[in-house]
Length: 113
Length: 113
Image (tube, rainbow over all chains, first blue to last red; front, side):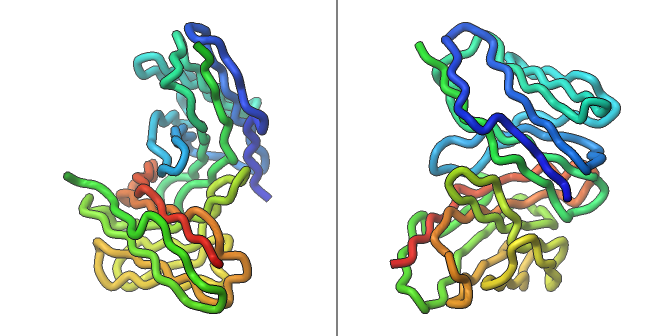
């Protein structure tokens, strides 16, 4: 069965450093991978999408890489700030339809001042 | 403002009662989804709908029912057959395209007393 793994433990990073979150998957050949941010008691918010033929995508302080050989995506937040503290979810999609995404459990990121 | 609304934010129900959670979107999206989120768990798909008057079971549909009579609305009924209904419920919508980026509502927290 399809499986998505994200760091199960909280990730503590000092303010100003780069936070790196990992998303690994098995038994899946996704057409794209998405990252979402979720704050406590709220719905997830879309951040970035990277397609299978793309190696890297950037948006402001965010960078995502996608290695289909390793079956892994890395999500980086540079110059991290306490306001970046949240749970980050990765999601995989096969594309072309509306049967949706498969989400990982998320990584709780804490940026300490 | 465009977006997805869910109501109510908090809902309490006595054991054995059915309850309906509301989800409305004005984004003109074709596809809508219901997820359940439990502590430490990822988002699990309950039902999804690609077009009006059509919907499909997700991974955990037992004990739930939905309807899609209007494009804007996708209500979820949690029936008494759902053995462990206490959870955070999230509704989402997307354009039917090749990336399925999802837009989430604020969620409804259901507690069974």
